[in-house]
Length: 442
Image (cartoon, rainbow, N blue to C red; front, side):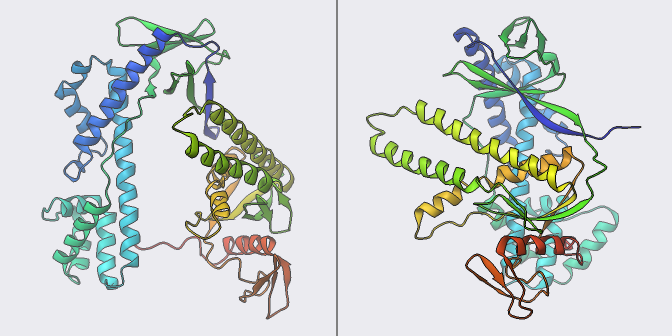
């Protein structure tokens, strides 16, 4: 019987400062790795290469034939990892572009429903999208071609194709990176031993030895992050851990995420009530230090103490978040967690101090840790659409009002704390009539 596993990232650190000569050799690999990525970005990041990036072996063959590896004198084990690393970034950028276009199409009031349906079809079908951008006739396989004809008959295709090309030119970003401080490394390019790791370099049959703080050994693709000023490295290793299935985790829990109290459940239990204090202390310190730095940066550009203090505050904040999340799972014993999608911070406004606190809110880290811990504990996480969820009465569904941090329903007279009411609505919607399963056809 197969055992369910989930991937998590483990970090390893050097025990002693890396020698100057050894760091230069590692930085040389990182520099070449960066050059290869930029070469792939510039050559295959445009519309003419859309057909080549999936699955990517065409790019690999063209890069092999280009002779660029021989020009750099770069080992093949790093060269091909850099290619596929860059391809992953290009694919992600095209995904972001399509998401942006989809949003613009939905917001465009000048389009009919047929127009929007046709444009969504083009975004959904990769071959059609590619051919429109390259101004080629759309030829699709089998039944898809028939579906295309049906949606194309109802619209002005030439007008919509021009719109799509114009928006892609406006919003698609050609990638470039100047960061040469790390590289991926395959299993055959390193070897653990002697309480450390041997890393291959550009010299044949030569390796750099770095002693490590632990004796753990991994057999997978790693990522080496370099810190040349501190003469340190950090190794990121993906590890598959066994999912823990708890027989006593049977509850269904709705939670509301907040800035000052991290989580409030539908029964009113609170977790992370000190988050606001940590958050404000962190954001106020960042804000004050930014002011001081901007006043004195011409005289004292050093940031060593600042970076060390910032790292300590972030670690303190993250440690508290993880501690409270562990307590949440231990006490609530959830089988399913319903949570509203966390909002983005709002830009602008009069009170800059509040805006700065919102910008420093660790919502992304909280979301990532909840997701990871749910996977590790075999708990289902359900995200609920949150429009007007805090204004609805969790008792009767009527629109109520909030007063002094509480919620009052004018229809049924129900009263509760605002976060508790929100958490109940999150759970209610998550168990409800298909709100979560709502999807556009294309």
